[in-house]
Each structure stands twice: as C-alpha cells, then as structure tokens.
Image 1 (cartoon, rainbow, N blue to C red):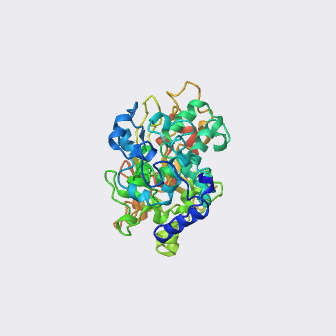
Image 2: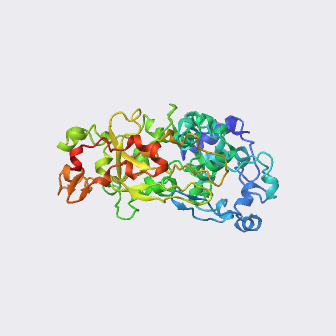
Image 3: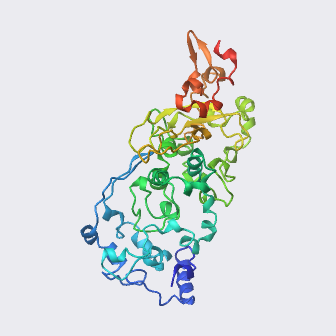
Length: 455
C-alpha cells in the first residue's frame, strides 16, 4: 500500500499500538516490502544491504569531489558507506517507529527485492524523498507541509535576492535564471537550505551529509548537530561564543536556552503567509516576550527604545561575510568580525527603528564567476551589501553598556586629540568598497550624525 493511503500518527508506547491497529483496519496487514517493515530482514533487500556494513564497503562508489565548503568552513568528511549505514545509533528506534512500517520503496522508490545495487537504485528511485515533501511527507503531515512553501528554510529569501539582482521579479522567477546560476545556487546555497530531511533525518551537506541517526526521524533537532551545522558562521558561533574575543550569549549561559526555545515550529515550518525575508515573519520571537516594560526599565531605554534595535547596545562584535561564493576561488575579502550601526535598511518591515545593526553580506558582482561568463547580476544595486541583523551574542554589559562610561563616551563619536573615538561603530561611505557604493550609500550614516560629534 502506498504512503498516500496510509495515515500515520506520531507517538510511542500506547500510541504506537494504536498505529498498528489503525494500519490493520485500513487493510495494511498484508503490506510488505521485503526486508523493510515486514519483520525478517532478507539479504536481497534495501534493509539487508544497508545494515551489512562490510557489503556497503564492498559495493560503494568513492566520492569524486570533496564535501563543499560552506559558511562554517569545510564540511566533515564521512565515507559514502558510513553515510548510508542503517545499523548505527538510532536504528533500533527507527525500527520501532511508524515511519519504518512505511517501507523503503514507498518513500525512496526503486526496487526493494534485489541485492543488486544498481537495480535497487533504478527507475523512480530518489535519495531524498523530502525534496517532494508535499507528495511524501505531506500525506501524513499536511498541517506542516501545507505551509512549508512560506518557510525561509527552503531558500525563499536567498532566491529573492538572487533573482532580483539578476533583473527578475522575485523567488517565483528562480527557474527563469540562467542554468549556471541555478547550478551555482544548488552547489553553494542549497547545501543548507533544504527540506524536512535536512533537519529530521540526515545531516545537512554542510555537516558532511548522510544519515545522522540510523534513519531515525528526530522530531526535535539537536541544537549543536542540527541547527548550528547550518547556522554556524553567524547564529551558532555567535551564540556559543566561538569567535576570538567573544563569549557565549547570556541566554545560553544564564538561562540555558536552546534555539527551539525561542524559534518554534510555526516560525521554522512557515505560517502559510508569504514572507520574502525572515524579518517579515509574524511569529518571530520578541525581546519583550521575556523582558516586559523594557522601555521604562532605565533612562537609556526610555530615551532610545524606538530609535534602534536592542542589539545595537547589547551585541558583541559579530561575523561578517566575505565574498566567498565564487566558484574560481578568488575573493576580494574574507569573513571578519565587525560591528556597524547604519540607517535601518528595511524600514518597510522593521518600521519601529530608525537605526539598526547591519552585517556585510556575501553579495559581490563576481558571485557567479567560474560558473559562466554570462553577466549574472544586471541589477546588483537592487539591495544594499549590508543586511539588517540581530546577532545572537547578547550580553547585558558590553562595550556600549559599560558601567564605567556614559552613553556619550561609549556610543557617540567624540574627539580625543586627533582621533575620533567610536567612529568605527558607524557605517560610513568611507567604509564601502567602490563596487558597493551605489548599492549601499543610502544606508550610511554620514549625513545622519550630529555635526558637533566630529568637532
């Protein structure tokens, strides 16, 4: 019986018994894929092969290219047979789950009753069924897959900027891009931006790829081995205090919060409301949810609460991207720690603030060099090369909130001899490279700061 006809419900223990009874009532008692979900495991079956480690070694095809490097650096390297071995940690849990009873070929296609690798992986076989999540996962989890198209985890935000810089209207036009740009996106960006399996079954490619727990379906992804694998260079490393000179976020050290304590399923799976970029989400966590009456808690908050976002005062230095998404390897600059206050680049979305922290992005006119000589960005200036940002490295006491100095000493620009103290905090035109000037000068602070600060 196909997955379309099966209505699985999540659970364990007593719920698991209910699942089996439901399948039998639905006519699934005779359902059987050899060696998968049917009790005894035969050698000539999907499960028979993928639980036989020596056999996997014998028939594996060596990798022809190393794992791609991502924002967090080069991915860990796992052997091809390790990536598809079912007998490791998590396998017994998988066998006890409802997903196991579906059978390999009902998700992956191919041929299930053969010991030949190439026959098994022929026909309609697919390695990652959740690429077609509406047809596969959606048969049982339609309340999630029905809104996932609006989730930024599938790359909507990045596709928007790629397409609009290429002169198209938005992410819905992604398929109209030149093939070399689509290929480049799939190699560079899609190694993290993916679908259900990237969080719940496999390691993202950025983490080495392959099964993370013997094909067990992990309802709540692990923060370190799940979230941080993809959100490494910015969110994860900032939160954990990995960067030199930084310390972990206070929400980790004092409250022990993990990613999913604030970023829940509604946000991660999408709400069904179209959102072209992440700050449009209505479900985003807000500081005020845990810290009420912030606008009245001290004189600094009272004065500046609606001037700029909380991170302007309470963030440490944070990672900024380098021009690294270039196939031939050249880059004008690499990633670096920095801190810049600029005019709010998304006032239509974050209309509360005049100023905000910004982060240099990986956008570069040469992003597609090495994929094709065709001009890739006909409209590069569509977006600034700095994004609105909310670094996950919050502290109560930072260089700007120091108890030993006033706001004017720690944040305002002032002259000390021939030096301008705190000038580096602000994004100025002199900070921009020639090729990013026209795209970004509109959010610089040159004409926004009081003139007496410079005297």
